[in-house]
Image (cartoon, rainbow, N blue to C red; front, side):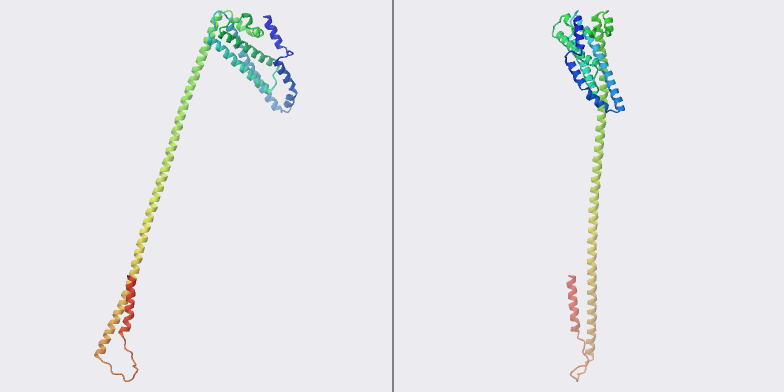
Length: 336
């Protein structure tokens, strides 16, 4: 195992010209500019930035430790050669390692956006990327039916698994590896099943609540639509009633106007009849007076006048009756 250790030592040296070191040098070259920007922050801004950096660093450490635990478990599974590993187990190893490695890199990028990470954090990220790639390669080889040689298996991971944090794995080595792996997998499967059941139950409750919400919303919309339709109907009915009432009032007004016109015509006729009756009465009186006068003249004949000019001009009925007859004719024309 000396060769892996030497490789890890060489990889940890900052002066070796590797991509991680180039990135480190580039970031160090940018340090003055970042320092200049930080100097413009207020005390409260500095405190907020330090708190954010601290929180991201803690999150990074937690995800990294979680990834490291998963890698150790994967190493234990991939190191045994007593029996072939199932495809499902190998797929789980690849998925878990890749997922946690992506989380480590994502938190690292978030930390870089706030403040330049330290050397140890950069070394951990490089180690995470390389070891994850190596484990995925080994698991893929197992999936392809290949069994790599034992001395080629962990050429890049000796320092990680020889650290003092492998106490838990050394305890597990005293038991049967196959039984331990099966037990862990069963526990993980049981935990996943329980979590899935809990999630499914919550989803079912959410779906039920969502359906109830949709039902209530539909009822509310229907109720509003019914109320609006009823209001429109009532409005139309009121308008129709108002139109009928106006038509009735107009008809009654027209009837009253016709009645008034009728009354006015009757009054005019009565006025005309009154004038006509008065004229006829005057004519009758004139006729009676003329008759009486004529009778008197017949009883008492007048003497022959001696002078050429008579002193008295007798009443001539024809002269008085002519205008009366003309007035009567005019009244008849008016009545016609």
